[in-house]
Length: 458
Image (cartoon, rainbow, N blue to C red):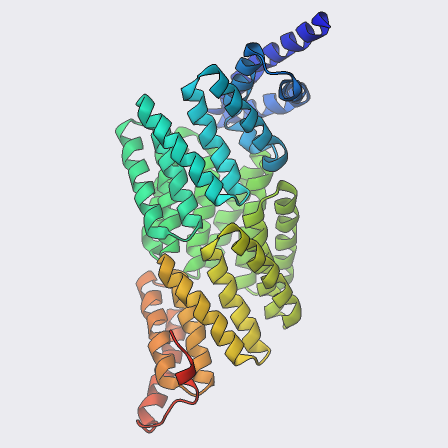
């Protein structure tokens, strides 16, 4: 019926103006951002009704234009408010088809970026790479340097998650240079945060902190509250990594406060997971379990597979510390399955270290050594010095357990050197342990054979 169609069309056009206003407000500073989200939330039912109509209506030039407008004007808010798998991906896929039908290459490039980001969040890293690469081709074709920067940044994020850290740094540095050259300060702050994350993964925590602090300063200048929350969480993780857990908790609580202000459930779940890690390191295991379980529920609800895997591993750590080894192994195996399915090599290396520790506690030293060897191989392939140091220490302890003190010292010396470089708070404790082993080695007969080192290949 024509009059019914016309009514839906008028409704969709009206709410396209509402979301355009909300989108403009979002970029105008902290108070305007709050007003933007409040407006969107107030009109959410009507906006979603128009989205639903557009997604299920036959393809016409008019509805194509509206699909493009709705997706473009919810670039920021949509990522905060919509479920990636159930809502945002279908919206972006429909908008991408519409942009291609209209021959709108600018919109096509933007939707490729947004869709790639959503796929990466859902664990489809290879799919995300393909879309980011298409995005860069279109951006260069159009001379769109801002779009090219987005594509390069996205590739940096995904390669980092795949464990190709040096390649990740290269993409992030290209994106940062490009964004600075065109004065894209919001993009610059994102690149600074991303470089910080990658250098933290490479084990250069001091350099990571410098990037995070630059990002935080820039986000506060711009009134980018969401970016500020991300930078605060990253600073918390950096201080956690060097053993300053109380300071980390301060940053995480600030991150959580911003997430609550924005009503951003994804950011809230990340802050809660970060708090769980810090509480675990401080020995408050019941509080850590509570944080992890809350985060796990949200991650599963949002379809965030990578976050789910991380939290399953964190729960495994807590139950291992509680002495409930069988339960910890079950959590680790669930985590490992997801990480291997996603191709998350860095996550896999961490879980292998933890599984090795669990096997050691069960008395299966050969099984533990095999798992630690697998982890060490992965960390060296990906350039992940932080987890290489952990794998070396754990494997060294296992060599000591079978009587090969010389090999243990070689491995554990790498860890001590790395911890001294990053000025980790617990360095002195590990130096003492290493010195004790070295003293034992000096008084041992020099021709004493190791008990089973010939069966271990590194």
